Amino acid sequence: MRHFHRFIIIIFLFFLFSQLLLPASQVFAATDTKHAPIAICHNGKFIAEKDGDVLKWLGIPFAKPPVGKLRWKAPILAENSNNTYAPQGYGKMPLQAWQPLENTSENCLKLNIYTGADNRQNKPVIVFLQPSAFCYGGGNLPYCNAFNLVSAHPEIIFICIETRLGIMGSMVFDNVPGAENMTDDTAYLWLLDTRCALQWIQKNIKAFGGNPNNVTLFGVSAGATAATLMPLLPNTKGLFHRMIVASGTPAITGPSEGRANVTKKLMELTNAKNMSDLMELSEEQLSNSMPELDGIAQFETLGKGLTPQGVYEQYQAGATRGIPMLIGTSGNECAYFKAINHTDEKKFVQELQEKYKKILMRLPSNAQKIASQYISRYKKSSPFAYEALLTDTIFTVPACLLANVHSSHAPTYVYRFDFSSKHGASGAQHLAELPFVMNFIRRKNLPQNEKERIEQFTSTIIEMWINFAKTGIPSTDIYKWPQYTASNSNVLVFEKDGTIAVEKDPYAKECKLLAPLLPYTYIFAEEYFRFPEETYRKIFIRQ
Image (cartoon, rainbow, N blue to C red; front, side, top):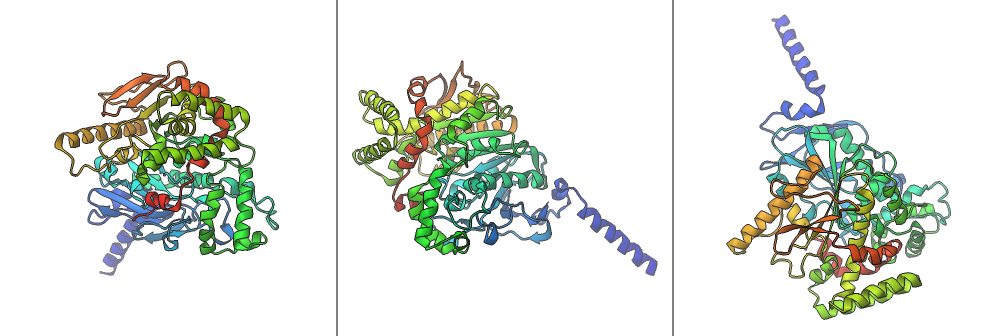
């Protein structure tokens, strides 16, 4: 009998060790089907939350908490661990202005993973770099929730990552006493956080059924800017393989020198005298200072020695060779805040005129002349001249110029989104395509024919985005999406009525006139995006 007991123990131990030694990609198959799967990662075993046919892992840390001595330091990949973690729910959002402090934290370097509960392996991975204006937002907000998208397409993995924002993600300490040991990394921590998240994904995504050799960056607005800059960051080769760039480019980043003014103001607001004082500030002190600091310099920086023009030059030289890109904008980007605030047309035009005057004051004379020339031309045919100038200068022209320099080195697909439903009275403004792509467009209380139109359109655009993530080609069986080249600049247009058509070089005149303004795009963006607190509360805070 004793021998029998020993035999049973040996069999049990053998089974136990065999399970521990299973490769991460086999974790699903080894898990009891009555329970949610466990993903075995280098920094722990994470139990999924099962929601219908969707698996969710929320709030997984990809880096050490950037707190204490690690504040304003480059992120460090999460440490190895064998601990098992039950579903945690969403992590806290990055520290930021106007969010309740209990909802935010410096300890924010986490990610949320969604996929279908279907046990498939080698799934294409989409990494979502969220819209944030570089200062606000978080992965628990509705537009980051991939439940609906993954419910319809369980064959993908969708990941939303959190990075540091605002003054926590971009600062310059050159003139601060005691900051001699601070590095230039502080100017672009927001990008280093993104790279660290991608490194974690490469190391662990097989545990969730994903293919580390098929990763697509899907950046929207500020997230799109981050996506376009990632190929230029050292040690990113192989971390991702495609880019979807929606309404954002490198052009809206500002020079790092301007961040010195933010540092100075932070020290004034908090009575900090040196770097040690800054490192000891509480989260509450930092959060309370952010509204005023964001008003000084809202947009993130590239770090020293690199300018937006330099980014375009590196694209031209082939820095992104072999990385297919899908890039586009909405037809009426700068009607966004008019729609958010329900501002009437006359008042909105007055607001834009005031912003335009402030922009001109910051531009050199040659750039002022170009902007004035555009306004004069446009006023002859439309009352929306200021709106059109801001849309074209901040979004349309920088996107087309990026497509031009990228297309000679990799497949490039360009779109313009004009489609509007009855929920979009102001037309297709900034982020207009996001509700369709994420599959959370509202359909209730619509007439049946309108509901069917919305559903068909939503299905088509999702299929295109997922096809691109799977293969690098966004065409469907019904719609052929031709590549964009400098000599054959095809743009796929999602028309206002829901039809889809190809136009050739629709922005030729705008690009020819406004291309010289590229070095000043961030000035247009900074002035345009200066809105009162209540506006941002409507966008980034759940009411």
